Length: 114
Image (tube, rainbow, N blue to C red; front, side):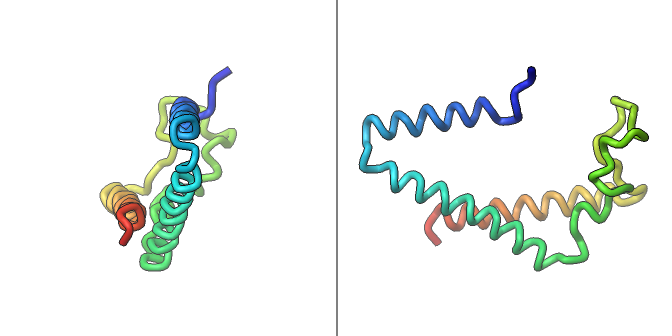
């Protein structure tokens, strides 16, 4: 059985949180508050990108709807997970990078306390 993605990192985070609880139990609330703030900033950054660029969503450049990836038609395991329309590869990549930058900077701004 294959473990879900990022299971190792979840275990590492749990071990580190347990160490904080053992060494500095009064800081658990602060640590959880910071995690909640950064996670909320990630969600807000995502929706900021969606509202600023409603017609340039990355999934708009895909050749077919992304949920059809596991359909009976896609039997080639060497094929890409999501095909991009011809001529839109650069635009698709830039839209993905734009979204990652906006979400990342939103999380950074909240993490720095701005």
